Image 1 (cartoon, rainbow, N blue to C red):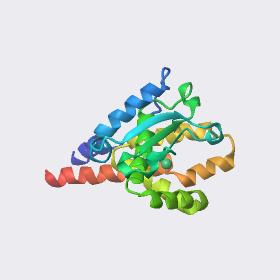
Image 2 (cartoon, protein in one colour):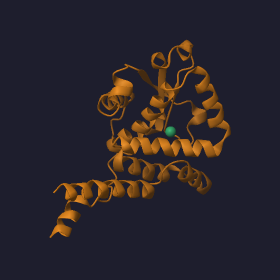
Image 3 (cartoon, rainbow, N blue to C red):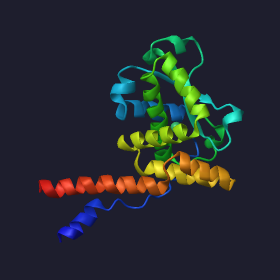
Length: 209
Ligand SMILES: [Zn+2]
C-alpha cells in the first residue's frame, strides 16, 4: 500500500507537448516576463526593478535560435549593473509557430537567469565574459547547461523539456541538432533531474510521516 501511494504521489509523469499560442505577440511575452520577475525572481529582478525589454532578433542570429538576451549596447552599459537595460531578443518566427505557454515560460526563465548573472558582473567582467563565451565552446556549453540547471531549480520543469523537443523539430541539419544537444540539457536529462528531485521530495514526505 505504501508503495502504491508512493507511485501515485511521486511518479513525475511524461511531459505533454502544449499547443502553439495562436495569438502570441511581443506584448504577451512582456507580460510573461513581468509575471516571472515577480514569481520566480522576486529578489534578483523584481525588487531591484531591473529594466528588461523585448526586441526583434537581428536576422543574422535567427538560424536555430529563438530567444537570446544581452545588455543593451548604450550608455547604460557603463552604469551600475542593476541600472543597465537588458533586452530579450525574439525570433519573429515564434509568433506563428511556438511551443506553447509553459515551454515559453520555461525558456524565458533560462533567459532571465542570464540577466541575473549579468547583474552580478561589472563592466569589465561582462566584457571578459562575452569574449570567452564567443571564443571558447567548452565554456559556452558548460555555462548554458548551468543556466538550465538554475532555471530548473527555480521551477522551469517539464516546460523546458518541451521547449527542447520543439526546438529539435525546428532544426534541419543533424550537425546543428547535435550541437544543441551538447550545449543545453536534453529532454532526457531534464526528466532525470526532475525524477531525482521528486524522489528526494517524496522520501522526505515518507520520513516526515
Ligand atoms: Zn542561454
